[in-house]
Image 1 (cartoon, rainbow, N blue to C red):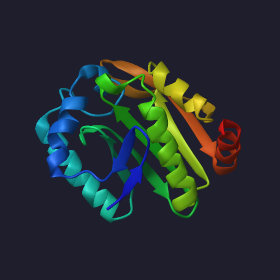
Image 2: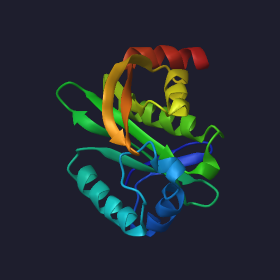
Image 3: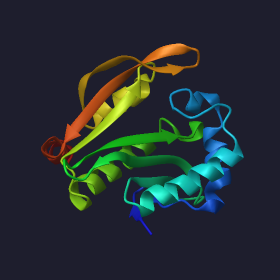
Image 4: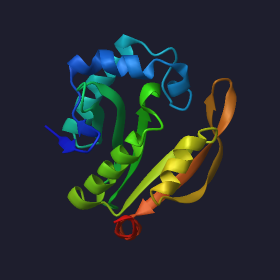
Length: 184
């Protein structure tokens, strides 16, 4: 079982008991509008997601973490590493957080914990991320944590009846070390 201890949150494996809290925090269209999940999000989708995560994690195709509120022990969001290349030592990070928990530093903490895990434990050299163009908050979060903007895949997604650009960001292991040193 994976568990990473943070200050406000823990990152941990998810299990079938978490389906309701996952559903409660992702069902709002304001969350799913920037995700490639179908709308409306259902409790069955949450249960199926948990099953897929277990398979991906067991086959070492990805690392998925539930973002656990330390007080309630409920899952309030997700973060994970996927699109893995063991040979080239890179992966893509993806994440979402329930509306009631946004703008409190929680995702900054979760992303920092995952980057520590990626660079120190898994020994990755690069972590990349994609952001659907209207998602300004996500792009700002990545820049704040030291990710560099690398370019735009124009009209990459068809979402909500419109074409959306995919903004590409990445951070290298040595850039993260430098950024962490400056934060101390």
